Figure 1 (spheres, rainbow, N blue to C red):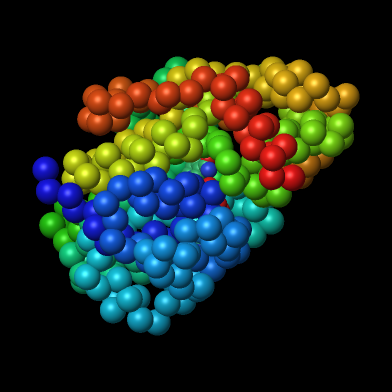
Figure 2: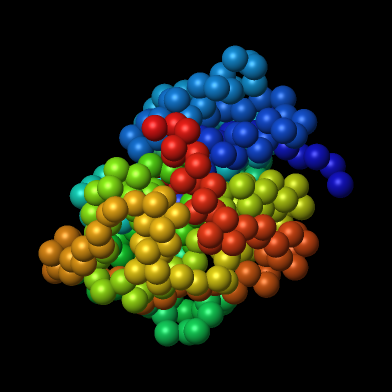
Length: 326
Ligand SMILES: NC(=O)c1ccc[n+]([C@@H]2O[C@H](COP(=O)([O-])OP(=O)(O)OC[C@H]3O[C@@H](n4cnc5c(N)ncnc54)[C@H](O)[C@@H]3O)[C@@H](O)[C@H]2O)c1
C-alpha cells in the first residue's frame, strides 16, 4: 500500500497524545510535521526534544484563529486533529471555551482539509456513550448523554457534533475522515492538573499526599497505553479506513479504589485515601458513568493489532517515568 504519510499536520501536537504521536511518526519515514497548538493545555517542552531535527514546524495558535489555515496545510498528506478542550476538570472550569474549540476549531480544520483534499483523523471520546447501560459499548451503541444541566456532557455533545460534521462531509464525498473514540488513555507526558486520575494519584502517592477519590470508588474504568493508541492512529491512516468510527481502548477494568490502592502499594507510599462526593468537588452539575468498557473487536480486526500492556505494567512504567522526571 502507498505510504500516504510523508507530510502530516497534527493539531494539538504539543499535548499528551500529540507528542507521543510525533515520537511514533519520527520512527517512520516522515518528511515533515506541522504542529498547530495554542499551548492551552499542551507544553512546548513535550516537543522541544524533536525540534532540532528540522522535521517539525510549530505554529502557536488556536486552530480557530489561524487566518491562513487553507494555505498553511496545503501540500500535506494527512491531518491528525487532536486540539480540543480536554479533561473533566478543565471542561467544568471552561465550558464555553472548550465547546467553542471543539466545534469551531473542528469545523475550521474540516473545511481546510476539504479544500486541500487532505484526509483527517478526528479524536472523539468514550464520553459520547454517556451512561449507556449496554454491558459493552460497540461503535453502534446508542448514546445516553445529558441532561444539559449536567455540564460535563457538553464535552460529549461537542465531540458528537464533530463526528456528525465529519461524517456528513464524507457522505457528500467531500472529506475522508477516520473517527476514533478514545477510552481513558494514559502514559508519559500526561499532566495531572486537568483532572486525569492516574497522573494525579501517582504524583500524590510519590509525595505521600492523600489520594482523593470522587464518589465511593466502585466506578470502574479501563485504561490504554498511549503507545498503543498512536500505533492505532498510524495504522488506521495508513490503511485509509475512511468514513468509519473505531473505539480505541482496553477491556480490562479496574475500580478507582483498587487503582488508588495499587498505586499506593507500587510507590511504597504512606498516602491515605480520602473520599469526596462528586457534589463536593463539582457541585450539582455533574454525574459520572459507573463503568466504561469498549468493544475493540472492530479496530483489532481492521488493524490486526491488539493493545500490549496490562494495567499494572502501565502504572509501573508511569511511576518510573515520573520518578526520573520529577
Ligand atoms: N487522553 C484521553 O484519555 C482522551 C480520551 C478521549 C479523547 N481524547 C481526545 O484526544 C485528543 C488529545 O487529548 P490529550 O489527552 O492529548 O489532551 P492534551 O490536553 O494534552 O492535548 C490537547 C492539545 O490541544 C491543544 N489545544 C487545545 N485547544 C486548542 C486550540 N483551540 N487550538 C490549538 N490547539 C489547542 C492543547 O494546548 C494541547 O496541546 C483530544 O481531542 C481529546 O478530546 C483524549
